[in-house]
Length: 176
Image (cartoon, rainbow, N blue to C red; front, side, top):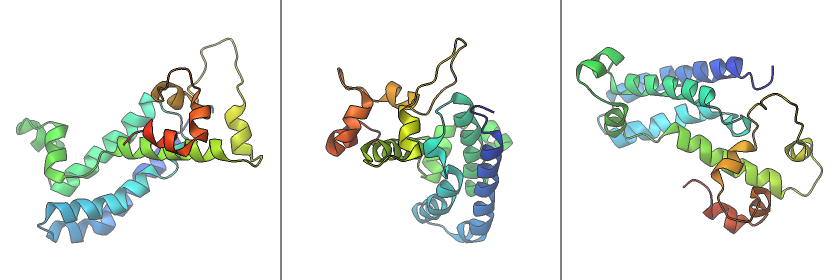
């Protein structure tokens, strides 16, 4: 049960496809790629990334969401995986055609923002207490939510929780 998010990832994928089906008719009639990308981002990204701020940063979770997001991106453009393969297009080529933002960057920004909120809290909420609680056993430890910050926040000599207390410093060390 620890770090098992497969059911939630499945719900996020279905929510993304449901959001896409609600805008499919509108986006198929639009000729302006920027407007189409804006509508896509406003409806699909929140549907897929809801709640990902508190998920552990694992390759399995990122791959599952990225795969679904790329399929939605291909559906927005109106191409299939086979057509993409025939034309020898890479995912970066599709990203230039669709002009949409990267989902992983959006998730990282949200995770960074949420981490700052949790650490700056002064009350004794369970989420703050859980963040400071560090259980360990002999086996390889599962990836924790805080491991993302230890890996990505690089300020020599300072712990990420100390950096998060200063809002200006926290904004400068996060994803842009």
